[in-house]
Amino acid sequence: MLILDIMYPPHCAVCDRVIAPSGNHICDSCRLKLPYIEEPRCMKCGKEIEKDDIEYCKDCQDKKRSFRQGFPLFRYIPPVSDSVLEMKYKGRQEHALFYGEEMARVFGERYKKLGIQAIVPVPLHKKKLAHRGYNQAELLADVIGERIGLPVITDIIIRQENTKPQSELDNVEREVNIKNAFTVKSDNSYFKKYNRQPEIILLVDDIYTTGATIEACTEVCHQAGIEDVYCTSVCIGTGI
Image (cartoon, rainbow, N blue to C red; front, side, top):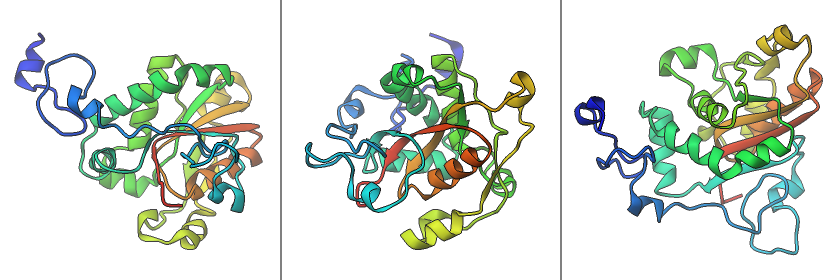
């Protein structure tokens, strides 16, 4: 046992109880309660759907989806929803270790088979980043990238508008709010290294609700010459 584990014992990412150092970041009882997305899934956003004789959820039937496919891990319900909100708003950055590792464990091989060249976290505006001190999507992306051996590029998509929190808006307001929030930096670190933009990327976010944020990011990526955009998230809303 490491001395740091004695001084700062690890806590379960879900229930916050102290757990034995194991590298799993979750206790056995909470692992049994995790609301994994099950089949059948929407073939676009990855949301759990009721019937296996349809390809897309109602939301993806009704709205434009420019990204190729989404890979959410959990339904956005307790206890995961509470834990993710703690990671997002209450400084519990360590929760990203469990969620990032679990995303890599479940989807890592699929990411590789898709030919993804770079992992891109959905960015925060610089003012919000300065206030919060970290970007939870970037924390998740770093863990995923380390586990599956893909580069994480944080300077491709730039959030140029300090928008209102999406959680405070309805579905229509979300799309308007986020529509012009992003741009692509053409001389990003990937371009400087390879003298071209990546052709296939994986967007990483914590929560997929209506898809407005992912759609806005995807549109600017396509405008910049990035051909295929996939996305992944810790959770996805179930009520739309």
